Amino acid sequence: MAPGIQRLYRRLRYGQPIVVVSGLPRSGTSMAMKMLEAGGVPLVVDGVRTADADNPKGYYEFEPVKDLARDPAKAWLPGARGRAVKIISHLLKELPGSYNYKVILLVRHLDEVLASQAKMLTRRGEGSDTPDERMTELLGDDLWRARYLLKRAPHFDLLELDYAQVVGDPVTAARQLDEFLGGGLDVDRMAAVVDPALYRNRA
Image 1 (cartoon, rainbow, N blue to C red):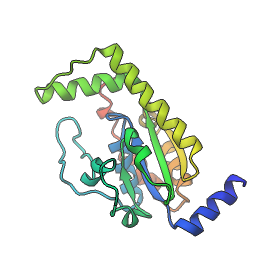
Image 2 (image 1 turned 90 degrees about the vertical axis):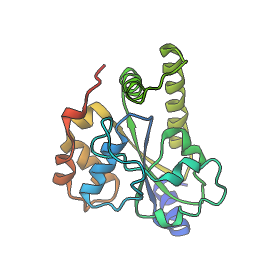
Image 3 (image 1 turned 135 degrees about the vertical axis):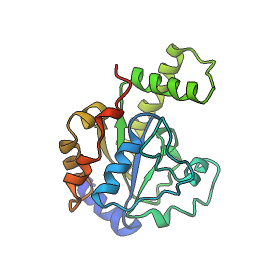
């Protein structure tokens, strides 16, 4: 079955897609959520985790997402159709195939991800027993597995965005998002919310 026909069939059978913003932690997912919000996409968020020094513009999280692997019912998913929700890459495999998902995968240089995570842990007075080399391997493996799944499973439609490119050229990124989600978003507002000053850990 051709990809276009398959997507139409799945849309008719399973309904409007859920927009998923994903990636490794500290890879720009909150920025992407803010862009979608500015563009007019309704979000699935609860505000439990509030803005702080690490994410001064907010985290845009939804607490039940953390229980995807332990929650067989996943009762919140039907209400997420047509809306955007943030789900880290490690949990994408827990999404059931009985829905359609348009996944926006944020990719960032692993050295930058590692540095950003280390600074967050330091601010919280926490540490990690895992050496940087091993952590880089683990992060790379997680991202590889997510890409493999997203490119092969029929219930996923994928747009991959590079974090540094989004910050460097937010207008192009906003246009890509608009096209991927079917058009009609406010591209100018989406681009305007990208703050280059928050790109604080560069490879």
